[in-house]
Image (cartoon, rainbow, N blue to C red; front, side, top):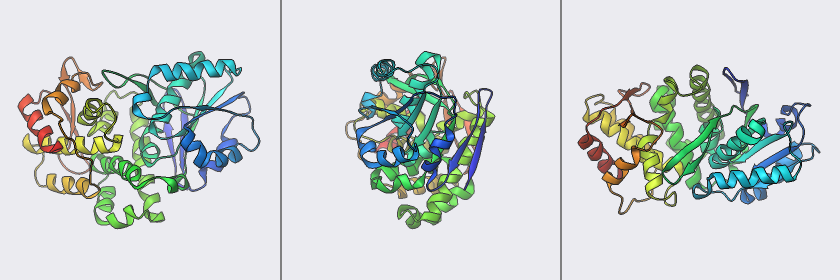
Length: 356
């Protein structure tokens, strides 16, 4: 049972990777906590709600349903759930359980961060992407029309329960979308993880239990190490944005309707590798990185998307500072470099190469 520690100035907690980890839920809730609120979608609750209710072992709880989907990841839905909590008697002793994919973990975490200036949250991610990325690290947020996660807060959970058994109902497309985030982890920090993803593609895609557990644990370990070293993205944590600069722009340009988040990140990683190559930062490993990303496709086609429009959207991204877009680039597998001031022509050409 891999258990990884996250240690921050605000809270120390564990991310537990274990089949059946959901059963640890009741024991993870402090006796001092009051009313329990589960934020989820109707789809997730239909699939796994019974298991979560059993894991609460008779503890009374209220279920707050979120409509799901990136277009609904807005402050209005957070306000609606907060109003429901008030009507149901929530107070500062209440606890929120985020039970769903990355959108749910982000939005429920944000709800917990701002309700009565902060109540505890437990993260139970039900998608691969959420297990290896969104649920760990305390980043919470909602979208604006101008971009993704432009409103948010850092709010570390009490615990993250990562149960690979919850992935059994995940569609192939959703699963592949999560794999792109694991590929990201291999490229930026773990050459051995990247090697496994390259050499064991069939075992990965067939969800062979030992391989599944290995790659999930590796990605969670990396996320925990990075967050412990840099909770609020002052320096090191920025490496986790590899592929996200262009990826977020693609999501916004397509109104969050065409791609899953991991698929947008895959396009963004292709662009980042291309920029790394064109600027001379990398050469020999660029093709290997692109080939591994592509091998977990195919990606949905992007029709009618213009590189210039994406470049404009990137100016509104959180990673843009004083009008300069910062890119996480990679000299070689396992290493990163954050670069700004890249000529616009290079960025446009790289985006064009990635999305065609």
